[in-house]
Length: 143
Image (tube, rainbow, N blue to C red; front, top):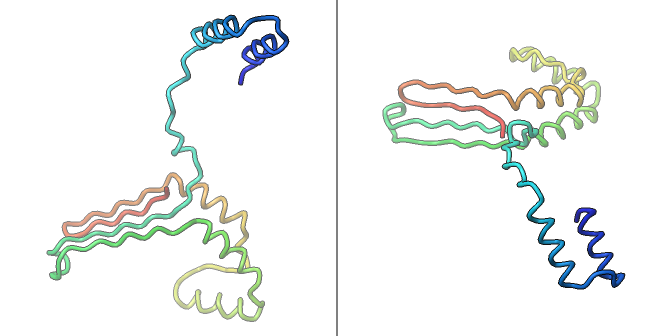
């Protein structure tokens, strides 16, 4: 409630104006108030909450018929996973990093910090990956 309406209601409760006068004043205020601005789509500025992966293919791609895969991963799950890495014992962390390196994943879990993940997630809002080929389509994006 804005200040002018509050003043009108206060004058009514103090007996300075009648109910009819208060109603006319409030009606006049409503006519004088500017139209609210149109709603703006704020989704582009909002933090993404999910990483979405969509894969679809037609019958020709597999020979078994058309199909679709729709994966929606909460980014909060990634945040929790990064926090959990701090609970991994150092010896196990070394073994995990060694296996990741053998698999061609140059990632050191000991160096992964929550603030680093937040930077990545903040940038994910602008990421959209579309892969098209004659028989299938892959889309990766945040929402």
